[in-house]
Amino acid sequence: MRMNEWWGALRERNFRLFFIGETTSQIGTGMAPVAIAFAVLKHGTASDVGFVSSAGFAPVVILILVGGVIADRFSRRVVMLSSDLLRTLSELGLGLWILEASPPLWGFMALAAAVGIGTAFFSPALTGLVPQVVSAGKLLQANALNSLSGSIAWIIGPAIAGIIIAVSSPGWAVLIDGLTYAVSVVCLYMISIEWVPSETVETFLTQLRSGWTEFWSRTWLWVIVVEFSCVNVLIFAPMFVLGPVIAKQSLGGAPAWGFILALQGAGAVLGGLVMLRWNPRRPLFVATIVMVGWLWPLLALAFRAPVLVIGCGGFVAGIGLTIFGTLWTTTMQREIPPEVLSRVSAYDWFGSLVFLPIGIAVVGPIAAACGITATIVGAAILLFTMVGLTLLVPSVVRMRSPAVSPGSLLSSD
Image (cartoon, rainbow, N blue to C red; front, side, top):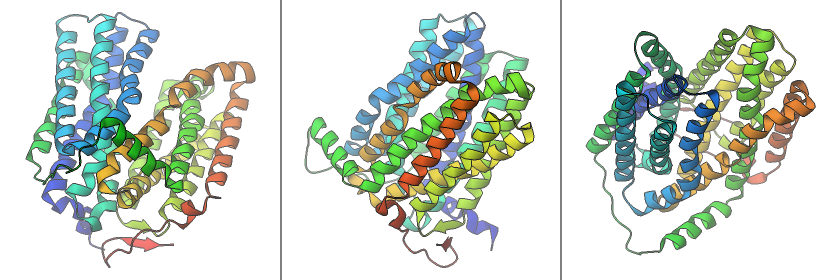
């Protein structure tokens, strides 16, 4: 196996430009939460940090379906370029404001909301653009590279932000985040793809309904979205709300929790490397099965296992999460008609995210009423049940990947 075969998608100019821009902006995105949190905490409280995070998250949930329609109606490249331009200006403005003064809470919230608006339009367009910038035979590999770069970015982005904050001001980290979006703008501008507007002009509501029809007509699609919506609540809410509490009480505090998250990130990187060469013949079956790996860190946390045991569980779970994301995105891009792909992707994003804020809000009170251990064990049992129910759906188990050319990717049953 020649190593250059692992990166074959990067030989294609359009994808290479896309990859450079997206990787750079992902590093900035990894820096932003750390930098903004410390900037807010300079004169604010933990609740203020929550308000700013909510201000950035709310527009994504509210506008993601609108973003899907826009991305199918207009050039996806232009939609993404415009979205990143908005995020560039917002982060540059916030960074300068932090350096010059201490922005009021409403200033942080307003600019976080502007970034969220950009994300709401960028994300559905991204799903639709990737098949346009890479050849069909390299699509799985391209998605694996995207997952790999995202995993690496979310490891090094916070680390870079921490170093900058330690030696200077959070404002500089936010400014650099804005510059990373600017790199993405330049790369998207340089991509050369043909866009032909649709000959039929439909109203916004008609396009929204047709996107829903395409989404609902595929059982495998909405079943997996329902599953992952539950997974977000059952995994990420207990892990990232109760995990730090357990770490503080029983594991040695923030360093232990940081070590666990670092191992999870390392697992995500390995998962991306695996998907560069692996093309399972039953992608949704594999994508569903690997989510069982999250039972390890959940149960290890619940029963206060040693840090290394929990970290190894996070490593395995990180591998599974990247495998799931790569296979899921590639399957959608292969199975959904290009003209409605962004709308269907928007329904996927909306369904997957809509219950997460609720899960984050209620997991604390549930743990207070039932106990942390019982809450996490209950989440693990429900997770196992959801995976089992998903595997009872024939279209999930029977979905097949197309054959690949010899020497490009490894395929197996």
